[in-house]
Length: 407
Ligand SMILES: Nc1ncnc2c1ncn2[C@@H]1O[C@H](COP(=O)(O)OP(=O)(O)OP(=O)(O)O)[C@@H](O)[C@H]1O
Picture 1 (cartoon, rainbow, N blue to C red):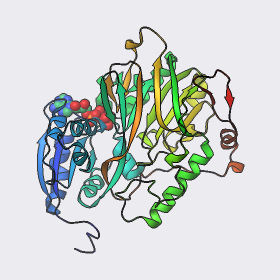
Picture 2: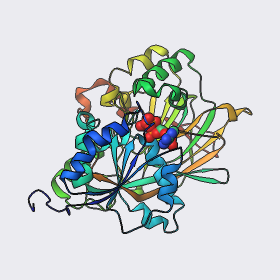
Picture 3: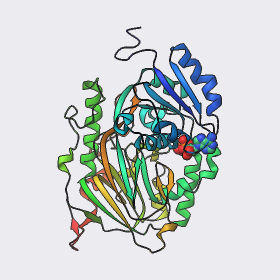
Picture 4: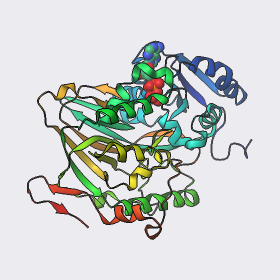
């Protein structure tokens, strides 16, 4: 037992939330046939609720007794995790509630969080995810706060505008397709090729793709060799190769290009087909911001191929920043018609600003870091990479109108 449960206590107390309507609708069956027998064999104590409606998980999280459960296990996709965090935000002891680790078991459509915690090969494996609930260790994770009018909405995963929001929110009726609905939505968005009329202003910490890729790679190497306790935020000095918040500028910079979509996030995979944020790290204190420039359908189609490996990262038309904050200002009067997706859920669109709360939340993880398969070839061996390293996006200071071509 001491060998099998090295560094973790056996017989965990788990609060299990099963969403029978998530993804292809098989969560209840999977719970009784796969998950529950493993929990029983491991002598875990489970308090189980089958969610009956939207926001049910949020209500449970709002009043969750603290110091009672080792983790909340969600059988659903990313939407239910978003609800749990929204509930924590309203908990009387909010910060303490957020320290309760979440462990997703993938029975939704995209299951992005599970993919990030377990990797592409095992991210959809219900048995491996259940084992993570039994033996995983808490790993800190940043939370983004979206300030939208009077509201402060918390996001652990993504904020999307333009094509990426349309493909998610516009295919909700196709949940039965599993994650196939995202590819369908992407292709539909390509046919329309509708620009996203907004101004994006960012407090940038880093925009050099090569530097960000090397830092992420070094972090992964270091975490494997040096960190047994991964409950502290990632840039606490234990893992070298990270950018630090000290690198961030206080100046707002504005992207001087029309964009097709804005996609910002905290973890590499958003679905099996797409590693959108290959250099994202769970608790580095930065928001990874992707602004996809308006480009031809052919170029966009060509980026689908390397989606699971994060190939689009190196494309010149995909601008990538590590930011401490960003702002969106709509450029059209009828902006309410546009889709805004926060963690895949629909919100009314208006001007908003996003900040980051470093290491506020926590997930159970078997490895202490996200599992991504992003290869960083040396620039000399990769032409596209070389171009990306040399050519940085056109940013201009918000108040001055001269364009900056940074090097
Ligand atoms: N009994 C229920 N009936 C209808 N909807 C429910 C029920 N229980 C939960 N929900 C809602 O189901 C929605 C979808 O869940 P979730 O987002 O986890 O799955 P998904 O969209 O299929 O997966 P992913 O987000 O990974 O793509 C959530 O917004 C949640 O509020």
